[in-house]
Length: 393
Figure 1 (cartoon, rainbow, N blue to C red):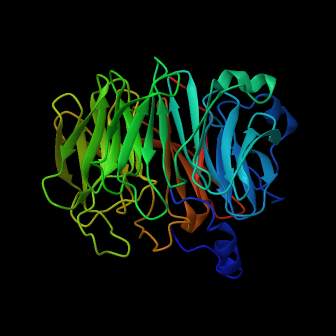
Figure 2: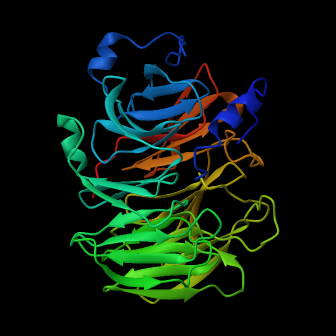
């Protein structure tokens, strides 16, 4: 992230430490509030957090349509439908109706709201402070709070859960001190598989064929065909955490860190996890470039997308590991030491990539078919996280 205004930051960070690491006057390109007609025609909302609220932009016109005041450090994720965005707040998960620009009364209270996972027709929330898992059909949000499935881990921890089509729930194991692996339970909550071969388990993704991957400090832990399979890194510490998958490919795109002693490692390589061959390919970034945990996404054909600190959006062939394109988008940047501070962030949906540039308070929309920036908008406040509506699939 580029550095945000720091006056009052200490208080903000202190108030927001419960959130897991993983205002008025905003306008469109001319700085004036978007017209009510734009609100009525809001297409594919994009949500962008800033210190004190959330901007909602029309994803096509890239104009600010709503400005939702919301104090504290907030995080955003797709809710799994074309209307809502999940907001992780200091008091728990809350639902934003991005189309009308208002927080709804649908809440999942709890300390340290963490990972939000979309898979199939399910949205799965994991609350770190309680170890509570909530899984529901996002279409049901149209009628209020869904009657979903609940599960609670043996002990609270920074974890994640994924529900598969047959009702199997894959959920991490851990405590506040350590996270050794994961278990799988059936639709009735009975344990059917367990592995404690994933030290520091963190992050997840699902590949083609409903193969689940969980990141470990020494590779990944796969859940496939009803059993856990460990795939090791090529070194004792080859840590994978943030991953992104797609139904179009058996290969997952993940980060890859190699320094266990780093206070904040700036990775110069990334991982391609072939869940079919059960192999990890480590690929170097272009010389001098690294990336952050907000830099990874997948394109419409399953291609990997990495927003580098060289300011370019790099396109990766997941099969060969080759960089097929490197498109300039933002100025070169450096990842901050504090994970909560703004830095360029990437959100991909369909043929569009949306990229923030905190240094200039700008958001860009890039066409993934051409690599060209087709729209940009300057915000009144510094953008931090970016997400948007996205149907589960």
